[in-house]
Image (tube, rainbow, N blue to C red; front, side, top):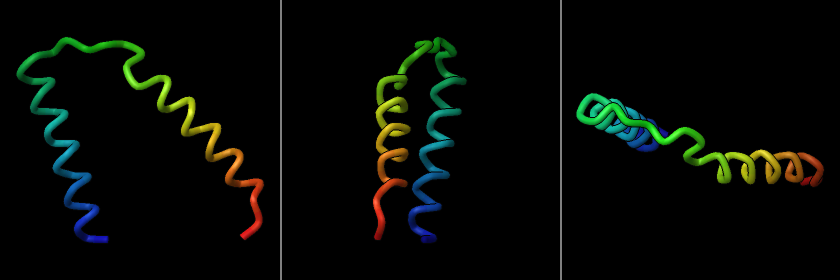
Length: 49
Protein backbone atom coordinates (compact mmCIF):
# COMPACT_ATOMS: atom_id res chain seq x y z
CA UNK A 1 0.00 0.00 0.00
CA UNK A 2 2.83 2.37 0.84
CA UNK A 3 4.50 1.80 -2.53
CA UNK A 4 1.25 2.52 -4.35
CA UNK A 5 0.81 5.73 -2.33
CA UNK A 6 4.36 6.79 -3.21
CA UNK A 7 3.69 6.14 -6.89
CA UNK A 8 0.42 8.09 -6.81
CA UNK A 9 2.10 11.04 -5.08
CA UNK A 10 4.95 10.98 -7.59
CA UNK A 11 2.47 10.96 -10.48
CA UNK A 12 0.55 13.90 -8.99
CA UNK A 13 3.75 15.90 -8.50
CA UNK A 14 4.76 15.21 -12.09
CA UNK A 15 1.41 16.54 -13.30
CA UNK A 16 1.91 19.75 -11.30
CA UNK A 17 5.49 20.09 -12.60
CA UNK A 18 4.32 19.68 -16.18
CA UNK A 19 1.57 22.28 -15.71
CA UNK A 20 4.10 24.75 -14.31
CA UNK A 21 6.42 24.17 -17.27
CA UNK A 22 3.66 24.38 -19.88
CA UNK A 23 0.23 25.51 -18.74
CA UNK A 24 -1.66 24.36 -21.85
CA UNK A 25 -4.41 21.84 -21.12
CA UNK A 26 -6.34 19.59 -23.48
CA UNK A 27 -9.94 19.86 -22.32
CA UNK A 28 -11.72 16.56 -22.52
CA UNK A 29 -8.43 14.67 -22.46
CA UNK A 30 -9.12 11.28 -20.88
CA UNK A 31 -12.89 11.68 -21.11
CA UNK A 32 -13.31 8.39 -22.99
CA UNK A 33 -11.29 6.48 -20.42
CA UNK A 34 -13.21 7.98 -17.51
CA UNK A 35 -16.54 7.22 -19.17
CA UNK A 36 -15.54 3.60 -19.74
CA UNK A 37 -14.25 3.26 -16.17
CA UNK A 38 -17.55 4.55 -14.76
CA UNK A 39 -19.55 2.06 -16.82
CA UNK A 40 -17.27 -0.84 -15.85
CA UNK A 41 -17.62 0.13 -12.18
CA UNK A 42 -21.42 0.17 -12.51
CA UNK A 43 -21.43 -3.32 -14.02
CA UNK A 44 -18.94 -4.57 -11.42
CA UNK A 45 -21.31 -3.50 -8.66
CA UNK A 46 -23.95 -5.83 -10.13
CA UNK A 47 -21.71 -8.91 -9.83
CA UNK A 48 -21.91 -10.94 -6.64
CA UNK A 49 -18.62 -12.17 -5.22
